[in-house]
Length: 263
Image (cartoon, rainbow, N blue to C red; front, side, top):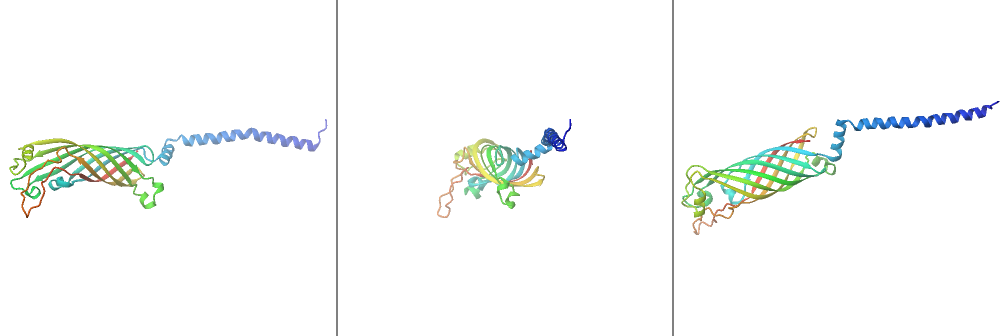
């Protein structure tokens, strides 16, 4: 049978198109396999998750100082403060804080703060707080570049503070009120617990591949001491002395440096 050249060319063209259609699915399958291998790499997956969701977990070590306010500020020196804090992030900005710490202060009641003669009580005060709260860390992508490098955050929470006070030596309490004389005996140890709320914030600077950060944290603690309204002494009522009686009330401020590791 004779086949014309035109018909032969058409047959070859159809055969070429059919071959291309059969080969094409194999090409797409190979591209898909390459993409699967890329996404399954643990390091690349970790980087991708970090870009999408931010931090998951932080562990911070804090060291700094604590300062009493109010009437307690008149009797307590600035003290040493040490803490540890864990932060669990729900997303890029919101997280829950869990922390504890230790603080030590030198305490002195005398004429300078009680304005009463025959008062000399020296103590050491130890504080152990347990903290649970919320943190809001601003999304760096929504901040100006200068602020984004500081990784600022705001925080607030509730805490329980365990306080232990130890009287040094034999105090002079003749000028104190009857309640205070009973409370501060020779070599006594006074233990108490208080509820508190705190609020504040801080900044953190990346020092190693967004894993290690150095920061600054400041909080104000509103503390509800069980003996806050107890008077230490009644100063004499004279025209030249208008001082009110010193009590055991006051808040607390912590100023801390932090070393943080991101997970």
